[in-house]
Image 1 (spheres, rainbow, N blue to C red):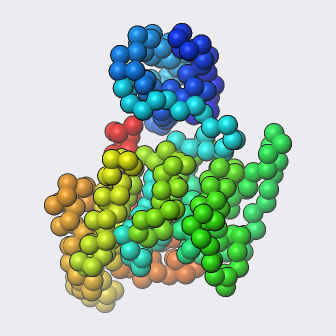
Image 2: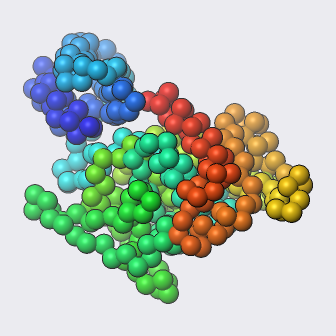
Image 3: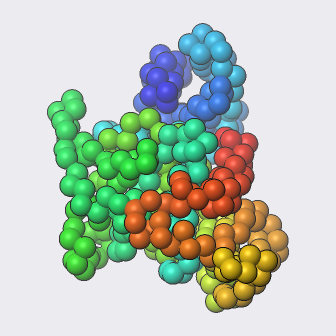
Length: 350
C-alpha cells in the first residue's frame, strides 16, 4: 500500500524545483491502516508558497485512488531540508509501522516480550514481522522454533533479496540464521552495523502492518544504526520491577527522547512482575521487587503498558518455539492488552 501511495505522489511536482515530491524527499512518512491513509509532507521553508497547492493535489490523488479510505495529508514546515529518496534499493517500502522493543539491561525478557507481542498483534489481524537486531545475542530463531532455517536468496530486478523465515504467520530475520549456535560473534561495531543494514534492506519483507525490532540491551552503535535506517514510529521499553533494572530503563527512555533521536516512547512493560504458583492461585510472590517500572513510568510521564507475571507457559513456549501468547489464553490476554495500547498510541501519533 505504501509503495502505491508513493507511486501516486510521484506525479506531484514542486513548481519551484521541477522535481517530484517523492524523489526530492518531501515525503516524511506514509501509513495505511484501518481504512485510513496518512501522508506527512515536510517543507524546508517555514512558509513554502506551494505547500497548500501540493497538499491539495496529494489529497485529490489519494481520495481518487482510495475512495473508501479516510485521507489525511499533513504539512510540516521549517524543519530539516528534505532528503532525497535513497538511491540504493530497499525492501522496506511495504512496512507500515516500525516498533522498537528495547531494554536498559540484559536479562529482563525483552526478546520474550517481543515474540509474544508479535503473536498478540497477529491475533488482532495484523501482518507482523520481527527484525532480530540483537546482533550479539539473537534469540528469535529459538523463540519461534526456526533455528535450523537457512535463508535463500531470490533475484528481483537484478537484485538479490533474502527470504525471511516464517513461523506462526510471523516473518523473521535474524543474524542467528547465518551463524552456528556455538559461534561467538567477535565483531566490531562497524561489522555489526553493516550486517544489520543488509538484513533491513535486503530482506523480502513484503507487506507488513508492524515490524518489531528486537534491539540489543543498552544503547550503542546498533541502536543508532536502526534509528538511521528505519522510520521508527514508537519505542517500547521492557524492564523488571527491581530498581537496578529501572535505573537502566531511565537511560533507554532518555536515548529515544534525545532531541537528535526524537522517537516517541509508547510506554514501559514490567516483565516478571510476580509469580503465582498453580497450587496457590490467590498468592503473588514479588521475586524481583514490586512495581518499580510502574513507579518510574508514572514519575517520568511515560505510559505504563502493563505487567507480565512469571508464568510457566511463557518459559516453556520460549524453549519449544511456540510463544505462549499463541497457546495460553492467560498470556494472550495480557499481551493483547499491551498490544492494543501500543496500536492506539501509534495510530494516534500517525
